[in-house]
Image (cartoon, rainbow, N blue to C red; front, side, top):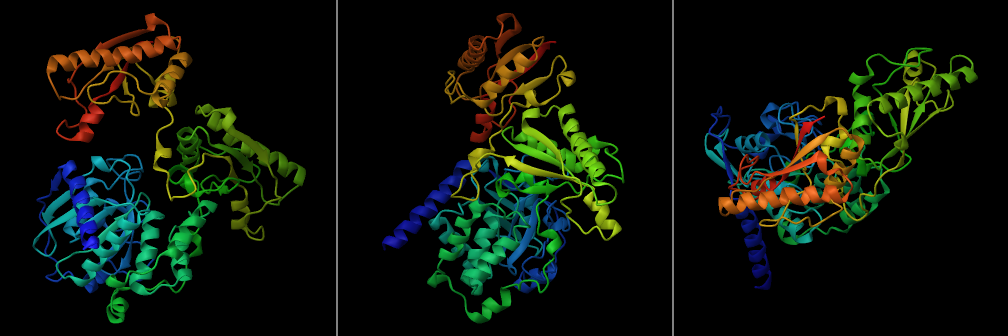
Length: 539
């Protein structure tokens, strides 16, 4: 009785969380009827699920248009459970930060494919997502996908996820479950390893090895030792065990041959999953290739790897790197050391020209002393004429969980990261990480990163004059909103004065509930509308 009471309360809490979102996405798109029976074998054939590492959608969200909006989607149990990420960073159209739930088209496509639930394993930004999707399904029926947020690190939530997958496996009316994190590597891999222990009889060694392999190489940090321990500690839940016959029919095999070429880290990982990379790890910039005897490359501004490096250094200002230049073993070693140093300096100077702080970088030439490939072959020599980036310092993303979500707060106001020459009169910029509580106009945190960045921006651009605009949501009386928006703008105005920004460079205006940037009928939209905007009025 006590157990039933506990599960009832948990169900109510989850339901209330969804109800508080109060938003259901409805898709009336027509679909081609594919099959009357959405069985595990149907999905296995539909997605050509050869093994556990088979990527139905790849790291960029491609390969399978029917599931666009997901990335790194892979089977856990044929037609029962799938794992992956949300395609936000690489989305072709509506790009947004990686640290977000599924985009709308991902939810819609899961619905059309007959999925019953999608589980977001992190908490960040979930209040901006739809709680459900209604659509026309490929079996010719109407379908509804629930979108839930459950924590991979919470044992009660893990219990619920195991139960949901069990229901999908044992009830014909319940479609597949999609369990996803941001990239489709860590949190989704952790839950997958547990499900493989639960339903496929995986041993501790098999489960932890699966987790390591399916991170696509992003498993290097010592911090993941605790995650492996937690996988080992999971004990299959007796009430949700399947028969051996059913387990054998829905459990994909591991591939017979592992492609080791995909099990490594590249520079883009430093942008989207920096917590996975330990200090002193070296990342090869595979896209930066020097001709023999050359110390520069053409069009560095369009080089993808250099752009990733720039993005990482500007996104994480506490990140520090050593840029290492290398040569093949041809020629004199003294000359090679000079060549390699000049190659490293070329990349260093390129980063400086784009505004990266010199305090974040050093450069060094290693000559031919550290070959990454065999010099016996032409292709190896070409690859050894390279740049490597060694991580010398980075922030601590925490040791006890897969992701410290709070560590992903933006470090800099967008204004501060752009070139002063590109700023024009009339441009407006929102302080994304600064907001007011409902009905409040005081600054609760004087160390807010956006306010600090704004002071830095004003000091670095002494000729710029700004207007500080205060805004509210549409709650309450319009006249009160006008007043409170004025008080909010004045609070930021006073903050800048107190930080020695000249009074003549500042004006402040309250706009009340005018010009909303998000829907006011949802809590997350009202939170965004209570904002400060900075407008450039003179250069």
